[in-house]
Amino acid sequence: MSQLKPNRIVLHCGLHKTGSTYIQRNLESNRELLLKQGVLYLGPTTFKKRCSELWHHLQWGGRNRKIPSQLRSQTQTSLLKLAGDHPEKIHTILLSFEAIFGTLSSGLVEPYRQKAPHKENKTGLYRHARSRTKRLMSGLEESLEHKAIQWTILFASRTHEVFMRSCHTQLLKEGRHIPETINFDTFRQTADFSYSNPTKLTETLKKVSSKREINIVNINYEKASDPREPSTFLWNVLNQALPQQAELLRQQIEANTNNGNLNKTPNPGLNERGLELAIQARPLFSRSEWKLFRKFLEKNFAKSS
Image (cartoon, rainbow, N blue to C red; front, top):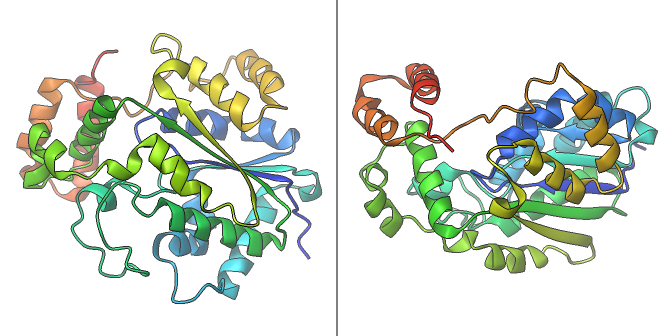
């Protein structure tokens, strides 16, 4: 029997281009503070590396609904180690990862996922959010040997036009250059964003709630954030994700003068010149070289707020 029996699991699912990287860096740098308050935080890198079997299951699933024993064993072992010396004191697991609902590349530019199970091989951003989320939840329940969990599915959304433009810029920054993505007007006509509509997404996720206690929270990114005060969005996310701990966490995080992430905005958009350079330069670099060029673009051609 696992000693780790959280009462709550919070899934912060992005969406893409809604300040997720900022949230994740601040939560990661304050991971010990969260542990002291009974919250186990998992970010994207930790989840993919330490719970790789569960990540693979989320991405690709399997031919039947049974959770593989190797997945259960690895996930349980990893979570127990991450929980520290007193896993029995962990009451909440907070997982922040914008690829829970789907990745930008598979949703918008990859034409066919040949290995995808259950016919999850069609494009459309967040088309398979329901089945992916269900696989993640089932995998966690089985690994923890515990199903009496209060679930919170939390995501932020932006106005449709801004969201599309931000996703387009992100694909160019990542070097995902295909004819359909180079020009924004072409991109907006060919990319399928219909499944990312917040109302439709919420209704889709409600279907996961069979025999589960689930609260779905959609945060309006424009209203919850302030470009001049990046931490405004962090406090609003914490208020929704961890309402009982949010105020104390805010006091402790603000009191930490060594927290360099609090006022930094990572993963910035690009200005027009930066986008132009990204399009022109893509054929010149390999995938590994592109990562370095992307850093150059973000440093020198970031879009001003």
